[in-house]
Amino acid sequence: MDKLIYINGEWVGADLAKIVVRNPATGEAVGTVPRAGAEETRRAIEAAHEAFPSWSRLTAYERSAYLERFHDLIVDSADEIARVLTLEMGKPLKEALGEVMYAASFVKWFAEEGKRVYARGIPSHKAETRMLAIKQPVGVVAAITPWNFPAAMITRKLGPALAAGCTIIIKPAKQTPLTAIMLAELVEKAGIPKGVVNLVTGNAAEIGNEFMTNPMVRKVTFTGSTEIGKELIRQSADHVKNLSLELGGHAPIIVLDDADLEKAVRGAVASKFRNGGQTCICGNRIYVQEKVYDAFIAKFAEAVRKLKVGNGMDPGVDIGPIIDRDGYEKIDAHVKDAVRLGASCVLGGEGRAENGAYFYPPTILKDVRPGMLIMREETFGPVAPVQKFSADEEAARYANDTPYGLAAYVFTENYSRGIKLVEALDFGIIGWNDGLPSAAQAPFGGMKQSGIGREGGIEGIDAFLEVKYVSVGL
Image 1 (cartoon, rainbow, N blue to C red):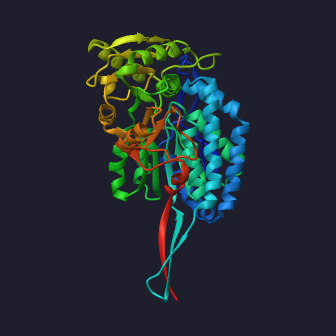
Image 2: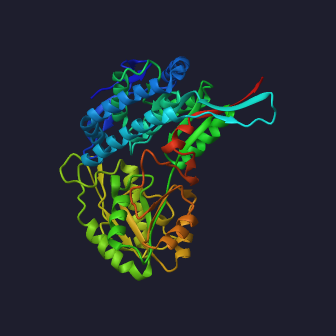
Image 3: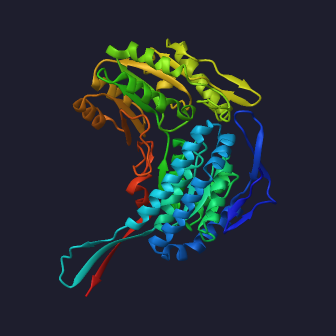
């Protein structure tokens, strides 16, 4: 599966050095993509810049029609995209198919939301003037996307950018470029004009530097680590670029003693073990009130034992491989540190590496304490540390004791306690009795060091618009 990059409506890069894409479940090569650098990125930016005036002048209804065709093509190709996604990323095929449909939902949502970018009239303080606030597209957008959701993290940026009237250059993760290229192929098939959507793969430092230093790029939208996000903030200073950053998380799950434990277990399993725990909003720390602590762990362990680990292409697999050796070693280090400091391993705890592929079983640790590494850092793997707490206020204090603030989860059947706890938590996304809160129509983003801005919902298109105030003298 040898693919090319997409610049100004043409598939190019056959003459460039190649990046080999490998299946993390087997270590086998599944395809190659070009190793583009600054020159190719500059051409993509210039193409987007040239396409911007005509694309932004289209009506919202015309842009919506293109997006609707793109959406339908994604849905029609969902099985094929899901297969490629599993081959290069590893998540179970049924989960990959769910991601593709989730990705399509962003295109559908913003195809409609683009028609609702409203100007407003402002009451004037002078009889001889009229005052307006209008919204216009920010310009050329550079999008940098991660490996863990190689389809959805593209459409969550591409959908609102195009609906707003922006043009875009996409740089997918080196581990998962094939899914991104399949989406670009559907962009072309949908008839979206040349230069509106461009895609480059290759040298991350060179591509990123061109994004950050080229004045034609007006906005950069990034999903990834907080460390890289901070570097992008520093690099953006010279041109004061518009930034949207969805960064790291360290999500707490809080189970109060009046929770429906069956519901709490279902939610914790869904949040913690989706994509093998390799998501930015998965539950990373579980706090359970002392009265139900033992009962929750027993029910939780019973549910987690049923999860099957293996190649995402195999039937019945719930948890695929860890993306790479670095990810595997971080998980292993977190578990060993916790056990060394007194935590007990209820399930799992021993991974396996074979032929360049890395697997870690769903693991539950009990009797963890705040000072352990796993309670301080994002694990990004299928490990659930469970800590006991006494009072609601104590749970909120533990949960907020992190520089991150992306997602949190609360399980309680008491409306009053739930509201108080939700309001006390410093997180941008809260799942209350819901382990899977993400949706195209809802704002997604974090507080503190988990990012800047929101994706999805009405806020998602606002991120690609500038507000222009106009005062008209009569």
